[in-house]
Image (tube, rainbow, N blue to C red; front, side, top):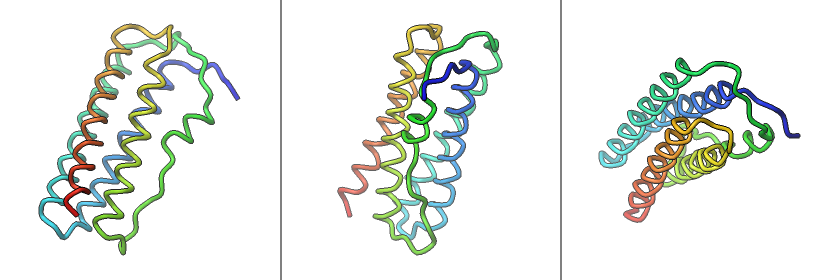
Length: 146
């Protein structure tokens, strides 16, 4: 179902995604035995914190009046991924992380195409898309070593 959403709602949703990703990577770091894998997920957790901060800063600068048409169901499906558990090995954790990053990247690609967003918000979503693409590459490279 397509709803009209405030741009601030979209930014809050993006903040939630980045926060959940940071928590995911912090949990993954605890499980990593391999030092290289642990370093990677700790790096990714730090980058997710940066993404969250940038989105929060943008949210503080915009008003509530801007709206866009967006299907909320699509948003939930874009980001939905399985969780990790204490028994998952490095490969399983990284595969889950890879899917999370791809879904987040797709979210930013979708919302960046909204025609009535301010250019600076589109630029932020484009930058975050590129950074999520970098996360995909880092995780893919690590998986290739396993």
